[in-house]
Length: 272
Image (cartoon, rainbow, N blue to C red; front, side):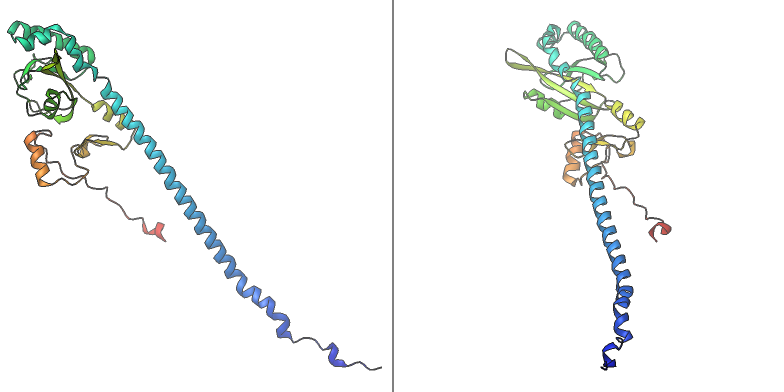
């Protein structure tokens, strides 16, 4: 019996080697592509959750700062209405004699010292200061006409007066809380407490925090960086600037717009 030699002929070398060549040629690029893809996905996920974490931490810090400012102001909110209980104040508003004025001056001076506020004063319905805690000072508010102040205009209408501004007498910034003093259901005067909030800024600076507070006009009134104070966080129209200048709320400060932080390019060695 003879065997056909063609049955035992070896397969062509090219066919036997082809699958191995395919693995050698295509497997490394696929592995590299897979690694790049996984690296990109990992970077995207890390960046996404990193930004989310920073945003949540920033929001928590913002809420803490807001509560701290509110807490600082709330310590003084009771003071203006407290003057309604003082008989000498209502007597002064009914009949402003020199003797009654001095009695109220002394009372306000002691109350201001105990509460550690900046100043406490009483105005009549025309906006003129009849008595003040700083009556001894050269730049006392006594006799000043402050009817143009927004806090007086709100308080005389029976609304809470809340106002940040630069003092028109001495140029000193402060936060004002005003309350309309009533007698038999009628407003007979306005009590005002001026407080300073610089202690907040000092705490931020000691803690090396980046924070600022802007008021309803978009003007920065408190800042860990003093250079940002009294800058606007929103563009102000010429009409708005003129209105604020007439009110002397920020005295004669220019109220320039806050410029964004300068961005520095990454070093070339880091970009490569």
